[in-house]
Structures are given as C-alpha cells and as structure tokens.
Image (cartoon, rainbow, N blue to C red; front, side):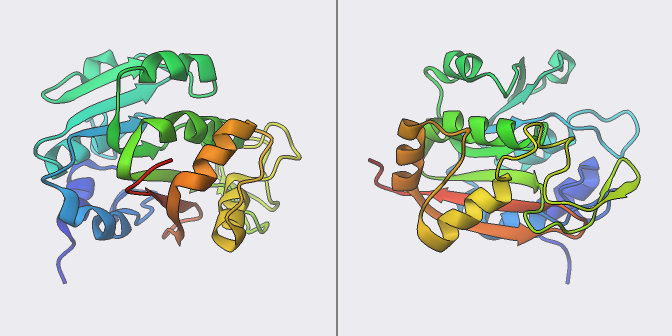
Length: 235
C-alpha cells in the first residue's frame, strides 16, 4: 500500500516525522488519520521546534510538509534560535523560549490555531508550560500534538548514541523528580486529571475541562507522541 499523502510529504522533505529519515518516527500515518478530513478547513498551524532535514541543504522540513498538506493554512514556526531564513510562502518563523510563559502570552495574544505541534526541546517542563499556554490559543475542535515523550516506564532509550535506562533522563527532565509528560497525560486518560507542578491551578482546570481525548502513540523509534483533541464547545 502506498503511504498516505502526509507521509509522502514528510519523506520528500526529510523530516523524522515520516518513515524514511535516519531516525524516522513513523508519526505521520497516525497524524493523517486525525487530519485527513480537516485539510481544507485548517487555516493556521503552529509548530514549536524547527528541525533539520535528512535532505542536504533543506531547512524546516516539517513546516514545508504542513504547508503543502494544508493548502489554505498559514504556518508559524517557533524556535529558540533565529530561523528567519525559513521565511517562504505561507511560512513565517519566530524566536521564542518555550519555557517562558510570559513570552508565550505576548506571542499568542491575538493569534489562534487549528493545529499545534510541540516538537521543541522535549523537556518535561517546556512541554507542559507550552501545553498550558498554547491550548488556550487552540480553536475549538482543534488538534494539539506533543512529540518525543520521555517514557514513563523506564523503557531503554537511545540518548546521543548511548542507552539510558530510567523514567526521566536528565537531558529532558531537569527537575529530576517531576512526573514526565507521558505519565501526566496517561493520568488524564485514566481519570481525567493532569497532575503536574508545571501546570498552575487555573491552567490545569482549563485543560481538564476542555480536552476531549488523548491518544498516546508509539513511534517506530523510541519516542512516543500524543494527540490531544480539544472539545468543540469549550468552557
């Protein structure tokens, strides 16, 4: 069977979200399942983290993938480094520290999105701070994706060419004791709660009231990804 169109675009541009990059995660077939019927309706996409391509000389592969997949959408990319050279038709990039809630507030004022993808630092604190900030800017019925989840069960995982065994590698969980993002999201799946020191009480209440569903998906390589769907009628 031929790959779906999103996976074909991922592989053409060399993003690891697809199936052919050196560290391919096989995420796009799952994303296509959620997004294929929304393609004509998505008007704005935000991706945190502007990655490199397996194709030499090609920058921002996933931003280009999203642009081609959603023919009407504006694509915004966020990175802590200046990626302004990526500016192309319907693509714009911005410099922002995803761990800074005040910076998020300033950036998101007046903006809203139909799809948000967090492929940034993969640090637990950054993932949950970003979720708290950005879910407010996600339109009702929108999709929010958190990629490269630190395993919650101690599964061995390659980190910079080595193997680390443990639930929260220090590279991604700088606090050392915080519940990792996968475990926080699994608590929502199991009981509708999002316990985390990185979520303020008001943000936690908003998320718990407005998330319709969470699916945690295993990729082909070590990291999992999570797809959150926002309720159509938000509180």
